[in-house]
Image (cartoon, rainbow, N blue to C red; front, side, top):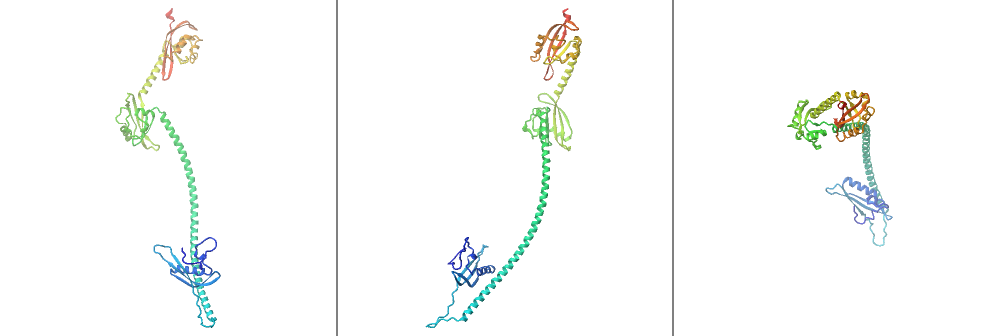
Length: 433
């Protein structure tokens, strides 16, 4: 973290990648004692001093002292250490004055060497003991870590088996979901078809129909119901009592509510504001399981039914009159083709239905009715709502001889969109004799 003073005699940056690791920069002979002091200071949390540490620097060997001092700071978990290097002063032998020679005794030198070796041996033992303790500690830690790894491995194997089981379950669930998705897709397609059929059915029904729910809110209605009940497309979901129908009724919602309370069908004759009469049917709306989920309101135009009935009766009466009339009568279409003839025509002119029906008037009786003026008059009857009055034809009819006939033609419409020509043929021969 910091350098103080001249540390080049004790620390030297190694070759290669730059580093600030203290043990990597320690000079030769210093690493063992330095590491041992650091380890001891860390364990004991107290200063550690080592003396007589021999290091090599620039080819020389000298002894130094080093001290490792822990530094504690409040509020911080991180710990720092101060490493102090000190040079040891060599003890000099006393000098004799005069011309006497300095003669170190061999005994004192051997004693100092033995003392130094004993100190080094004691340090080595301490370091070795510390290494043994560290090794045992690390061995215990490795054993504990190994046991934890084995336990974790067993847990991982158990987890792997559980994952395999979960994978199989997920695969089975995925297959079930795929099958369910296909069923839902088919149901959705069927529902879409049913909905389209229902929409087309409602759009093509000519009867006013309204469907309401149990809460009396409008669900659906047919196009004819829009005019009769004064509805708009935005009225879907609206309360039935809030609408103002074109009917002389007090409260349509109240009437439908009574029908739902009684769970029975009701039929009422109501009158529209235009004077037309309708038969209103109120029936419960039943679901597939038989539950009541609203009501269906339909209206039947009584006047139209009566009018159609009267028209059918009138047409039947007219057909009977034509069939039993004394004059010969032909019914022609727009191409002047005979659609029907009465008994009097067959009797007077002596022809059969096979010779008459589905034949044009020009082809009847070997061309006896092929008269350009008559055809011109008949062709103007339908498009111009014209008529033919007392048109005389003199002709020598087969089996009848000379005859004078008088023709009258009118346009008739027995059914809506169907236009025909009613041709009366009067035998006027007696009037000219």
